[in-house]
Image (cartoon, rainbow, N blue to C red; front, side, top):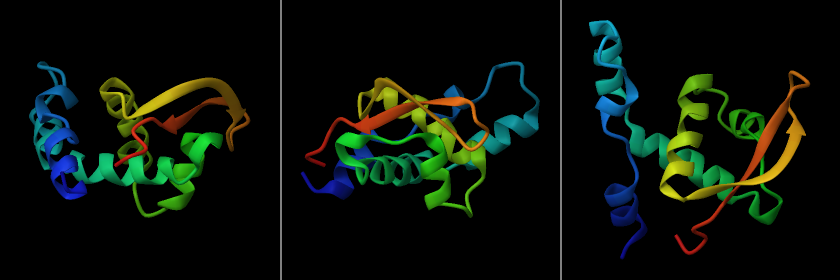
Length: 110
């Protein structure tokens, strides 16, 4: 299977899962405008570059400074849930000084 087909088939999150039922209409409109497939691919590919050392969210944010914080960090949960990345159990300090989980790519054959 081509990488493009793989991402289109398995990456991306249903906009209904990005908002709560009682959120305002503007939140629903925003959820429908997010290209979660593109963002999940972007974040996954960035995480994969760190190999077995893994990375924290601040490192991915630094690689993609033009993207909003929430566009990058929200993808971690969906990638974890789908099994594309794993939480190594290690923690490293982020820019704020607070600990962030270290994640690494699990599906290295993509």
